[in-house]
Picture 1: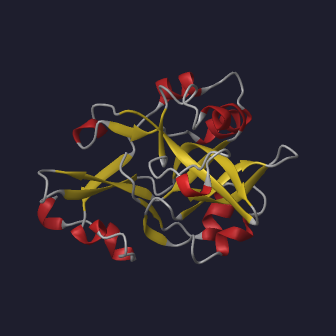
Picture 2 (picture 1 turned 60 degrees about the horizontal axis):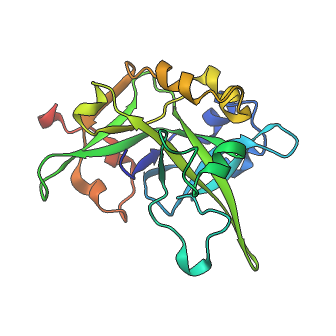
Length: 227
């Protein structure tokens, strides 16, 4: 999965769609929604379990910072975690055991083609509902600074999405959210076998998205000449 996400879903819809999650006021933060070109290091809204075991919204820095990271050595390639090794990698294994989250998004981008002339493509749900991605979260503290961060799990792409990239996010069905968050019977293996990408639509979009400084709703408009 490439490191660009779109989050254009309205906050009211997310409140209704994930009505079990508390602390939804953060969805009104204009720095979280709407966004159409979120890059690693920026913030994503996600759902985790609170200390009392209930689902709650939180704002996560995209790119997991392990609790033991030193201030001058914050990792910058932790926005994705391979599902095949996440239980063993020092950066992710504690979060995998104890701190799971889900990241609902409108869609994401992948690039395809020759270097210097790559065409971006937008991936989204044809049913106009969010894609729900399996993630992990961690809290990092240094002096007065506290940062909640996350990573998104990936797996080997299926034949449909593999045309564009050899990896894809770990997509969750709505029914799997609770079991993923509660770590019921370590459901990752079964989730990977149940991933269905039949409702995912893919189309080319403007190369404007190549710049992380560009962010507007037109970035997810299809390019008719390439359809």
